[in-house]
Image (cartoon, rainbow, N blue to C red; front, side, top):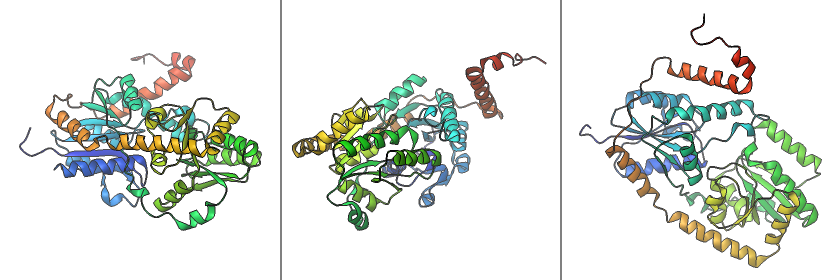
Amino acid sequence: MSSARPAVHQVLATLGYGDAIGHEVLGIQRVLRAAGYESDIFVETADPRLEPLTRDYRELVDASHVDNLLLHHFSIGSKASRTAYAIPDRMALIYHNITPPEYFAAVHRTLARQCFRGRREIHAYVDRCDLAMGDSEFNRQDLEQLGFPRTAVLPVVPDFEHLDNPADWFVAQQFDDEWTNIVFVGRVIANKKIEDLIRAFHAYHTRFNPRSRLLIVGVFSVFERYFAALTHLVHELGLTNVHFVGHVSDAELIAYYELADLFLCASEHEGFCVPLVEAFYKQVPVLAYAATAVPSTMDGAGVLYDDKTPIHVATLMDAILSNANLQDAIVEAQLEAVDRLQAKDFDGTLLRFVEGILRGPRQGEPRVSFDFWHQFDAFEALEEIRLVRPSAFKGLPEQGAP
């Protein structure tokens, strides 16, 4: 190793504004720079508000050095990922999970295809990474099942500073009244099972509390077919108090948390789910479906359910919302969970992993021929044919046939 200290850069497909991964990427950079490492963020795309904080992924080639370490946030595969794979720097994977493609097959075929390819492509990194880190135990176990020999958990420790400012007065003025506000925060995307939220709310609204509304806070413009199906469901059920509010500012988000009486989550696939602990922090009782990483994220706090029958969920909602003492007990347990989460030494854990990788033995440098990814894509296409159309696969000529 050269006498100069190696750089520790991050690479990812896109840096989004205000999302959990974006917050983590910027937090990692702050820790690394404070520890004296040169550390830049290389991306394929970025939100315009964050572009000045990033570098184009093509600059990785010039920044590359055999002693450097790349922290690669793997999502659905990208040109940035493939560039990082091919250069000689050490690599550690940070895995935020890839949603199973079947959630998107009927509503967003492009995203379904990207998720399918991402779950295939990640196998190529098993022999490329010195360490593979999940941001939850659920994600670490997924990495282990994918075949990564060295795995660990780099805990998510959310930064709540953006929730400590004044709330947006206009939002508060609209919805802070005598009605009961049921809130969900997250992208309006198929794995979040927004339709199950709507059905549970319908049961609660009609059976228990007609003076109630459902506020769904999160981007819906990207998934038009899914959003259209949801609005049709709302119309079919005759609901007039379901509000899709879209992407919001921090001040607006604070207002929605502060006027919420209950945070309701029906998501079936989460790698962590930061809004759950944001709701904990803002002292909103949480009722969530016990799937994937959700139970470990809630850490014994909040209320979990495993039966999605609308009347069952509605009965749980009413039991919480009609009992002030129960609400206080739930909130107290949630704040204790926040204390445990914030007590985790994210900075120290990250630096121990980085220093351990830099001191330890490394995987061999990647040997990438000029057509490696072309061949990889061809293999994916053949494998898809083999799985989906076995008779057509059998009809393909054997390797080497004229």
